[in-house]
Length: 158
Image (cartoon, rainbow, N blue to C red; front, side):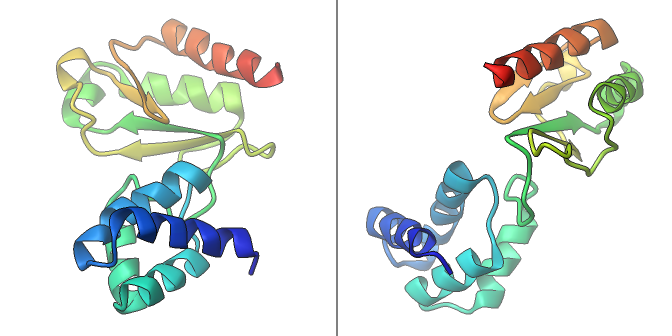
């Protein structure tokens, strides 16, 4: 495997330490650098922290924001709570699927967008809501979503 991946893990361990409590910040650090945690990353983290790979895998797969599969540059997470559903979540998903030509759980061929559903984003009082990477959007309408996604598409062309 490429050495730069190993260096990332060593750098994160140097920052957060080798305790078991360092696992989550290290996993988050990998996500912020690579957008997902590979099997190789999990094995290297396990070695560095002297814990089992199963413990690392269990933690990485428990949290929905720690992706263990390659994702697009922009990960769109749609809140799937009943509140967001009552406020038009299905129309929001349909709008995004039509624009990007993908379904929930898929990534565009150019690896720019991934569309996912997730549990509560904490914006149910202003639902439907979505998160694109770390940026929340609320009180969504199909028109508003179209503008938001178009802006990301335009920014990516620059």
